[in-house]
Length: 183
Image (cartoon, rainbow, N blue to C red; front, side, top):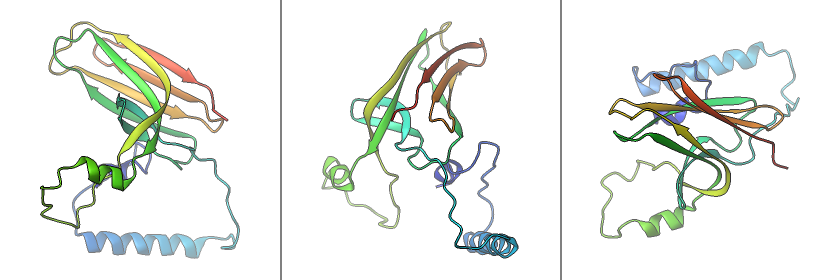
């Protein structure tokens, strides 16, 4: 839950796990009410914001995508994920895709029907599959160790152009792909 909440805010925002849930909710409601009370604009004024039309992320397989930027994310938006490489690898393959959510019925069919869920309140995060390949990149590296990580940054501007940069921080090696806005 903490990771999903963190995706809704800029990277500089720290999402903490201390505190009682009911106190956190009450504090958030009070802060929101205070902001609404201070607002000089009438409540009827509509704000038009540009948003992402489809989730964008890393293609893991032909049937699975890890979303980095979700559908309806306000633009501009930037997110960075760290990818662990297996020891001994000398190349990092990065496939960037637009995705679509997998309907809950299809997810349920894939799971073993004999398994019993101990807690029905735990909601599993939505799953995504790639719908359109946007870019493929290969970052050449020195041999990877157990500690090798590649940071993959996604930035979508208000013009809809997607810039994806993969960097290995220790060596400083980097590769970038720019994908023009799709209409």
